[in-house]
Length: 232
Image (cartoon, rainbow, N blue to C red):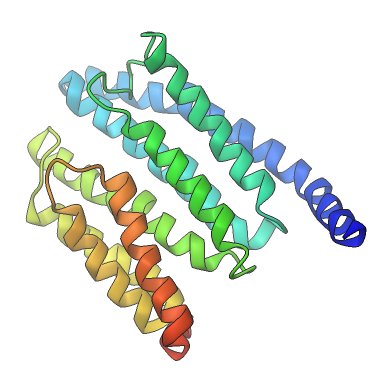
């Protein structure tokens, strides 16, 4: 038991420098870069809601998505990745709770930004104990970060508001198929299903999209492992 603890401690210490940088980068994206995108969007004549939506998707891509992409290459254990996500969840939740929201991306009508970080952290943490390459957890998270992110950007560019439209879904489908290929035929199927689920109105796709993708990939992992062989 002591040896296992020692290995875990060594892994955490090995990951600490990288995740210190990653945590700082995530804060920079949330507190400064996304705010700059919001301000630039307003100056170009976009509405407040449209500008806020662009800002949220920048966080999807450059914080949640980029960090997830790095995990298989820089992380040795799930503790620090999950701790980073849960810390960011707290940082995004408190402004809602204290009514001091970060106006450039936080919507007073929902806590979707908090759900994004919680989903990220929980999936990455628990799936590592099944697949220590991280990919089993990373792929569903990327469906959320990049797939849902690109659909929002496409729709916002065309309609200047949060809405469901086929153009955005087409963009998400293409990106999710590319991402899903990392987990073989099961990943492709999961990407298609997640694209369909994102179309459903009045539910938080920060939860439903990664949860659906994870369910499919877990099922394939245990019952049809040959379907998870990566294409690249």
